[in-house]
Amino acid sequence: MIEVVTVENAHWCGTALAEQFKFRYRHFVANEQWEVPFYKGMEYDQFDTPAAVYLVWRDVAGVVRGMIRLLPTNRPYMLETLWPDMMPDPIVPSGPTVWEITRFGVERNLSLSLRKQISAELILACIEFSVLNDIHTYLFLTAWGVLKRIVLALE
Image (cartoon, rainbow, N blue to C red; front, side):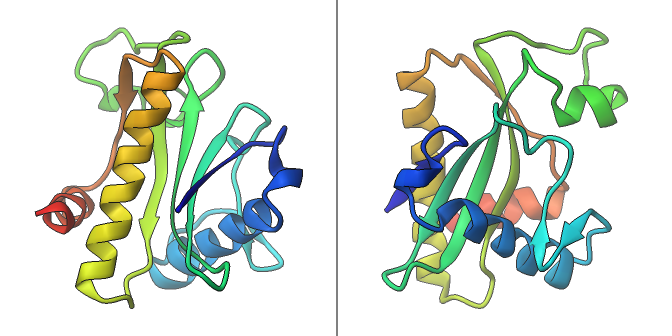
């Protein structure tokens, strides 16, 4: 099951908000060796603001096994702030109908079938979120190897 977690509704989601920061530490800092800020085993950055939306996949024990962070582009977002030169068009898209997908991660030590399931459910959750919130475009910048893992997980 996917939980849509925001600062506004986090109190209804138990530990989901804190647990996704812990998942990000395990996944991105400990496993992927990203050099990003962390504190007490939780990874975060300057884009973890009240505008961020977290799609969180937890197992039956409540452990986060996958997640995506969504950022509206009418606020500061990663691509615009950190890598505007990576955009193919010199005009970086922004506005209420354009959002950015960041921090897409699925725990690697799970079975291939479960990783596929989690990836597919997270992508479907992005689609459903876009329909419910009038989002027309998602921006997503990632390494080719990461994209291949995501796409292969869906086959």
